[in-house]
Image (cartoon, rainbow, N blue to C red; front, top):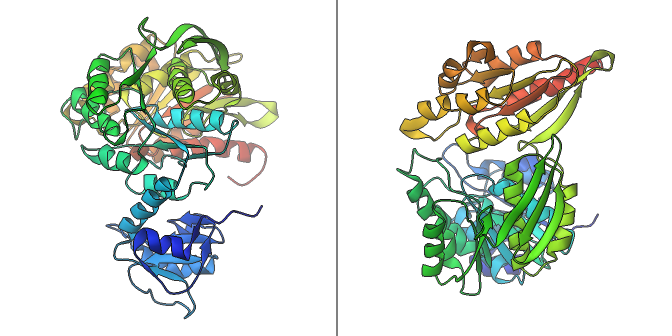
Length: 474
């Protein structure tokens, strides 16, 4: 498939104020030579432990059309196309700002303590079936991910979805200035980032920075059930946004949950989305997906898309890698077990959600429900208590065994009843070796942890059992 031209040399020079060594056209943008495609523009960003200029020659070997640099790197041919700028990260931001300024798309910005990537993917899935939709890849939600996502947009995009994350105050403000969303979603506010914030109120204030770059015709989609709803709604109004759409179970919600049924593999929902009653199925199990769907459909209605079709399309949204994706792992003699990959990130509320999903699973025969949990990070001084407090909902869930790893999760291991304790390990690599020996046919295993706890190591080890059972390479 031939990719369309995203940037020309002249457009890039106009956007950045940089100087081109040659004329060029680029069909994509990349920050990493490992996933660079032929025709891409390569940004030589610099970080504390790397310098992208060291990889420019490799980028050209892989077929890069041009490299954005601050200086001419070594080992380059004389005819190499370069865009020379004063600051490559600043240039990336200017690329993003120029792309946003030249786009006629409806922009949806998504933030929140949990659920933002899931909502972003629901929006992508539904809107892409109605018209040309651009959305940030993976969790590209920081100071380089957001401008990169904007700069990668199709020129004729009708809808654009940008996830915005943060660790400290002021970060959402800068991202919102780039995106300037027509619709802003705050999924919810939870007790995360307590290394950087003193309270959930402070977290809410920082998330509300998303409203600062909106215009008065925009819409704010907020969790109506949250105790800080009034604070968030007030901040939206203070920034001139008067169209406040609440979603949730509250009778005052505009996108209101009427009823639902939870099953092991999916959920059924009836909801009133701003006056339109819809019955639909979500192909992912768990109440958190139901709440995410309300925010998603409210935003879709706000940008003028077909909300009825969008609700129908939620039945075809498959599980997301690291966020509840289910895989059947084949073993010998026709046996298998089910793996729930929820390993991308973790907080107290999201771990409770994954516990509920596992509790609703239905193992075959003598299969067990097994939770494998890594540390929840960035919880500050309350971390040990927050880990130990998970013992209550786990004990009530019907889960058979809980395996843990990391210094924080040791508190949960100690708080669990002895009969529910699996092994506690220092790290995910040690735990992976234990789990692969413990797993049996018909088990359902859920793996969850913050990104820094590297629970993907456990996922990879469990998936490798399928290769071993079929005689392949592990």
